[in-house]
Image (cartoon, rainbow, N blue to C red; front, side, top):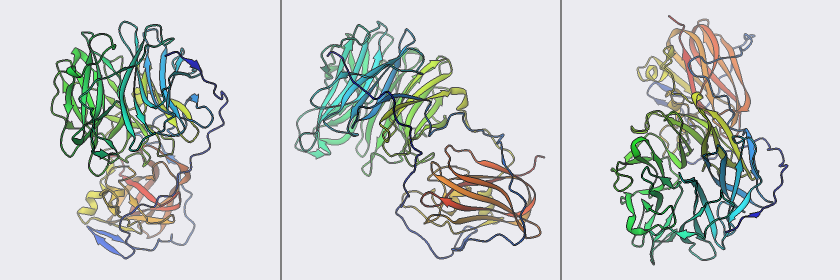
Length: 566
């Protein structure tokens, strides 16, 4: 298939500030006083004591955990602008042997649709500037989820899958591969990947059963064989399986006789397998997990290992990441950078793009340091790509459906680090459980299926959208921790609603019974899982966060206190 030029607006309009809609979650709302494990919740916001408070202090730099240098809401580079009336989705990228970067993406009117086509563009300066996009494949069907791989020979492989939305139910057409031996100037005719995940069926579960798709790069093994990851169903079983199919001729043919099963289980959807080839030819498969309830739920991902080039696979095991639509890059130092759409709700409720660093990739992928990299402020996002542009620095590529752009964020990998111990921080949750402190608040909402949402969510040691105290309405709202006996404090830390603009006043009550304000948080959008700390030196018997404005329901992700050193 020949490439043809696509005209795009090279002067995109500035991105407006992200304004997230108000959230109206379901669940039970309580409006009466409650008592729970030392927690007292009232439906009245406390007023500060009379008198002139001390001026609020400026935020204190957090010496235990400082945030990254990038802003998740502001990309470093606009890579491409979609044609009028179109959007860009599902980027993938590869750093070539000559140091340039090639990227591919889907362009279409929406997330799905018959007009989906595949574009390619390149960068010769490490991702700072890009060529205009060009069409590399456009069939009568929805061409989607393109992946690009360079082999040791220099050959480029483009893989994707197709859906036909002109029929009901929509019909998946399978996974296809084309190759180019001239750097992407011309491409072979597509060849279908043959798979057991195919066949005719009268059973419908979104699609007629018997289909396959792919959302992972083709990988070249040390011996030269290639493996492409698939997921889908057989004609008589709705539960999605994950497999790999092999090519021994440089990607020109893919036979079902070479297919190996990664994972299959009744009651579990194994989706979007992503392969990473590690030292010694070990192959790691990262698996997105769906259930009968949802394929977009906060379910821990699973991993499987192959030590024989993808012929056999270990039983899948859960890890402590909730990933979707992921991509991995083996870094020059041997670490793995994992970019993924985060379904955990830890950083945001919008499936923001998270970067995680796997420091020991030959061991289970648990405990990885991670940070929010990109959040467009919409629900239609993630599906990221990542390339190492120089040792220790990566470019994470995502999309902004609101402005129809492909965007990129540069990340210094060293900035993504595990949370460091904070020895001076007081465990407020343990104090409440022991009866040595209590909580007074009107933020009493609980959320079905989200056990971290509740009065104690703001003192559980976890900063997250779904690990928080919620008021069942917009601000004002108040949350106070009262100590059974006065305590010496040095700082008070606060995290508000991740990804949404909120404002608050932070106060402490001294031994004289008077409240004094120690800090304010302006109404701006904040990301990440770090607290903003304020000086609060002295003896206090209570701390309070008064949320004064909020976008949607008022949320307190976390409040913390530190004791003086020594």
